[in-house]
Length: 116
Image 1 (tube, rainbow, N blue to C red):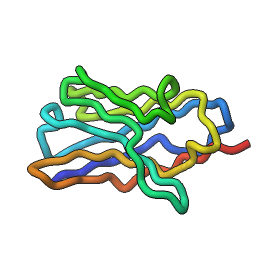
Image 2 (image 1 turned 90 degrees about the vertical axis):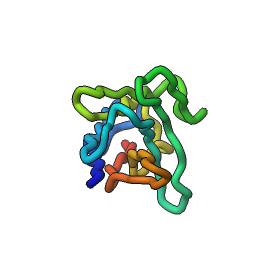
Image 3 (image 1 turned 90 degrees about the horizontal axis):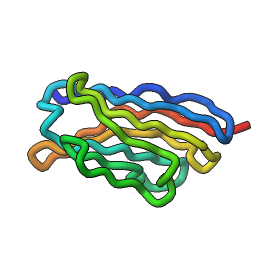
Image 4 (image 1 turned 60 degrees about the vertical axis):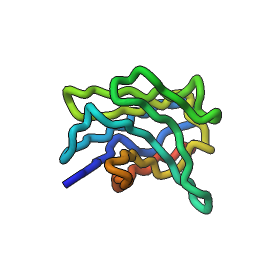
């Protein structure tokens, strides 16, 4: 079955960096768009970044442009989110997602906390 496993979250000081990973299994990873989303307490889940199957097209939320980088390694069935210059407002649970045959699949999420 489709499985998405996020890792790499944690506590970091403002201005710091983290690299999130999402390991995928159960489907032909290299054929599908992947995306990262986040949900802060009391807020709706929002799109952070999206990458097409080959990585040719990438888009970011305005709030993370210039600070976050999404990438993928199709040989490892993994998508990454490099997060630099982190701010307290980046604190959230981060999820990766894909869509297969009209159905969305989400990972369990990884907590990112930016605090001094």
